[in-house]
Image (cartoon, helix red, strand yellow):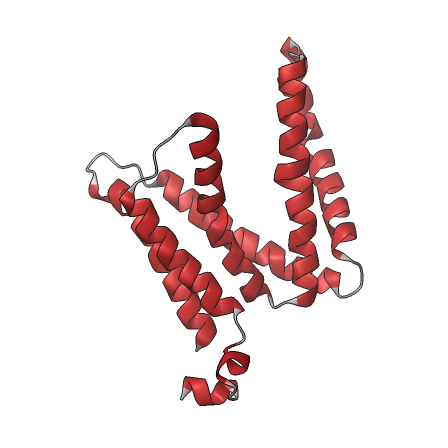
Length: 180
């Protein structure tokens, strides 16, 4: 019951985020449908990673996945590089930052968490991506934070907290008592 409640709270926050886009008449839902499909694929991938994490640690799962992704994408990278690659300090620094702090480190944390927690519990943290992205954009680009975004984040954070807190310890009662 707690997990479903947490998921519904987080989902309601996501719907609040998308509501303004859905109210406009010229909205193209293709992006939203692709994102929905990506969510299903990410859930499937996370379940498989959790199975792998039973035998090898999260860092190994992350490293093997990234090598496989790199090998798969190499032909596309070579095709894109046919006109040359711009290499300067600014681009190298941004790319290095994105690779390590936007991919390798979070991915290692993700796979390590999958080893210790249920997939549904770990997936709740995906709902915090808009928060971290918006804070980053606010401080680096000066983008405004809207009231709609704040309402959505309250709902999402409440959902994540509901899904993570061991309420049986908080109320000193078995969890079955709390769901009755």
